[in-house]
Image 1 (tube, each protein chain N blue to C red):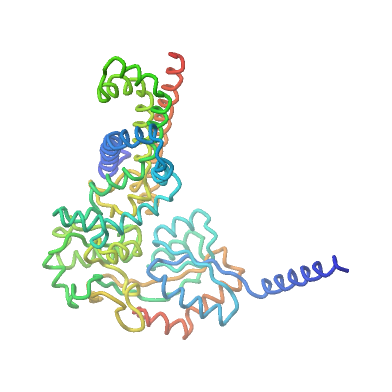
Image 2: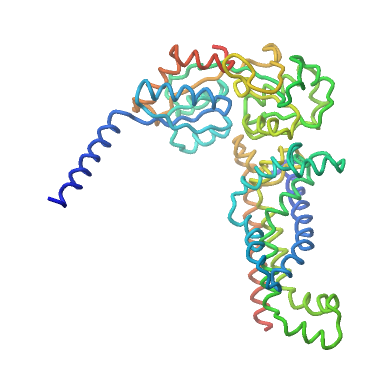
Length: 226
Length: 252
């Protein structure tokens, strides 16, 4: 068996982390993207810039601030401690929070683009048919923005799978809890277990290729439909 | 004339810069993370005394070893153990006969909180904490020493679920100093200066609880003909470096 039990655990944990993060990001990212797409507020640009920050910040910066702020003296740490949750560093929950920050723009931006390209006309038409805003959102916007949701989910998932710096800073390399595949590859390389590193790293390459292939094929089919 | 003056100055500057670089060489050193602070102090003195300059990269011993194997431009390697330099020498990457022990490391159990540890292993044995930080035992000799201590004390199984690993001893220290782990095994040199603990509280682990951390250096092939590299090798074994090394809690 080329992969050890620890490697398999790391892969499963990575899938678990990426799935949960993607789900949360779709829930959080949809209202943010909707607001960004529709608003004329002066806050649009600063907020858009904040959402995009993880695109340009090194993951170590995000990891460092998370390590400090989730620690017992940081503001997130103080909050979680007062809620009786303890601190979130070195926990799976902590990784989920870190990943949500880290992958936020990869979900919000495709959604925002999708919402913007729908425009106001379909919603106004829905309103004239007496659909209330919620009804209009679920029966008009969601189906029209479906490709955007697909792109957002795929990118959010894939980007979380590729996360390394943040996990390294706040994870603590705990098997089954914070030892994800990218960290496990680093461990193998660091300890000269190149054969095992190759299996995991090669798997990542294949996975990433398939994700991008799915993304691009999806796009082409959509174009064909239109 | 007006055009010539700046050119003359330029030529003069270029000449000065060239002559300076001809005299003073640069040495690239790979340094085990635990030796970060002492090496920085030694490098300052060395640069003052010899005019050479030191470019240091710090990391876990295993990580630096992997980098050297793959052609990293280091000329001298200060390891956190004695087996890695030996491996480099037998692999033909280090110069035969150039190995020497530059320091013997001490392991310490440290907490950022002032009254947390009382100079004994009591807190460790009680186990009333959430996280105990160590360096990755597979990549960092101080991490390996920490697991030896836990084994000797019969605490490994009990504390396994509380262990958090840093990729190097520096990251282990970072976990403890930010308070994310209440305590952790780090190198004495990281929390010790001028003969005393610089902050927090500690238990200096008795030497019989772990294999001696004999830290060897090896001159790498790339540094063979660099006078700055051999000067640093000599300097590290001299009295001024010895004083600095001891002040950080290492034995010699």
